[in-house]
Length: 79
Image 1 (cartoon, rainbow, N blue to C red):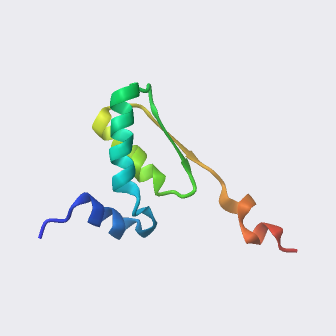
Image 2 (tube, rainbow, N blue to C red):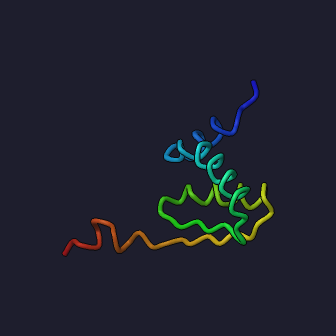
C-alpha cells in the first residue's frame, strides 16, 4: 500500500504529527507573502523536516537554527 506524507512523517518523527497541517499553512503563507527565505528554529528538531520540504517545494533558501537544549534541560540545573 502507498504511504502518504502524513504516515511517513509520523513514522520518522512521531512528535511531528502536526507537520502535514503546518506545511499546508506555510504553503498558503508563502503564496500570499512571497518571503525571501524559510527559517526554522529548534527544538523541536522536527521543524527542520518541514523547512527542508518547503525549501524543496518552493525553491527558497532555507536557514536552519539548531539551538542548544542543554541550557533548558533539567540536567543543567542539577548540582
